Length: 197
Image 1 (tube, rainbow, N blue to C red):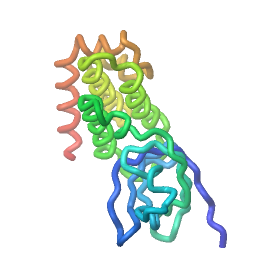
Image 2 (cartoon, rainbow, N blue to C red):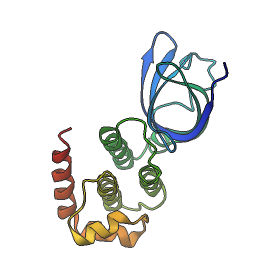
Image 3 (cartoon, rainbow, N blue to C red):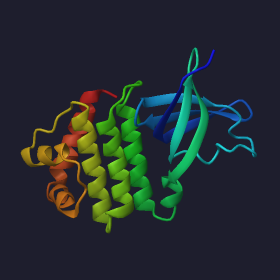
Image 4 (cartoon, rainbow, N blue to C red):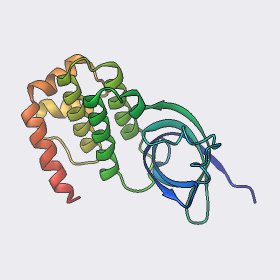
């Protein structure tokens, strides 16, 4: 019986070894939400998938649904953010924190394109928009506010609520976060404590 192949863009959040050459990979995907999938023989030296499924890689991934779990059948590599930011500790820490927040708050397989675009927007902003250490901090805070808002935790502060509902990562938007940095941190801290995670 032929299995339907699902193709989706996704970013590898983390992975775990399975046996001698395989891996279990957690991927935040555009079309399926947070997915756990098995990748057979990926750790073998000759594997074509190993670079496309390295932690923090953005790839076009092909999956099939097995009886118990997803299985990765192909992956085309895109960006590897960890490699790209390897010489920039502040950017690397910020992007890892953004992905950890997503993993902590997003549960199960449920398509959420807005949330996916928010995470990807933050990662792209770290690549293209951030010019100073302050910009990096503000992008991380704005990403957290937007993720929490999309997941229903709300942002009661009027100015911060407005930018949490927007999509842009321009300097003017980051300036609002910078001006309200202590309020942003307090809102994020309070919202995360309400999650009980």
